[in-house]
Amino acid sequence: MSGQLSDVRDGAGTERAVRTQGDILRVATEEFAANGYSGARVDEIAARTRTTKRMIYYYFGSKQGLYLAVLEQVYAQIRRVERGIQIDELSPDEALRTIAEATYDHHTTHQAFIQLVSIENIHRAEHLRQSETILRENVTAITLLEDVIERGVADGIFRDDVDAVDVHMVISAYACFHVANRHTFAAIFDRDMVDPALQDSHRRLIGDMIVGTMTDRSASSV
Image (cartoon, rainbow, N blue to C red; front, top):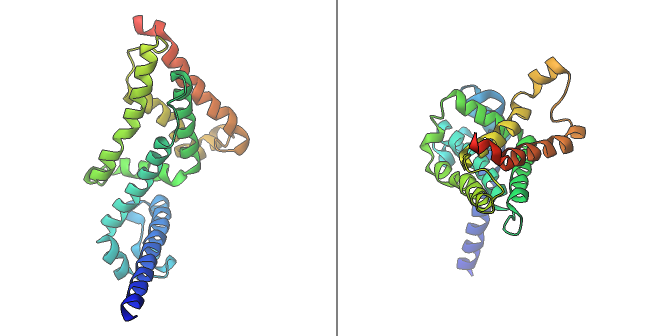
């Protein structure tokens, strides 16, 4: 009986630990996104999660370890979105549009991700480069596009002089711009780019842009 109780306690303890780490990562994501790596305070994260700085370091090793865990989590989230896209039965142009629209939807609804990417660029990706997980899993973003582009070229639909990294760059640039430049754009042009009323048209626009670019085969012969 005591062994069974011990197992139950151990299971409950593991569940609490997982829940605590999840809470820490959630709050840390908000803190790093709002204040940057240098400005974020582990004491603040501890206070908001009703834990201790010592416990945070127990789980993540250091402030840098916590920041890296946050980066790995937010990058894993967009990779899961990409892996969940069902494109096998879609034509190449429909598949490409689906990927572009899914990326746009993710980026405009996960603003902390864009803020963290911007912060990491300020640091010249010095933290991101230390994560084998991010570098390894991000390959899927390109392989997914490569498969679609190869099908489109083989079918005579797509031009053959633009590679998957270029397509990924165009899609990401458009989607990221809506969040990264939201406030300056609104101040200058009086338009909130993440206004819900604009999302359908903006989503269609990135689909039109990327499909139009890839189906313009005349450009590849210029």
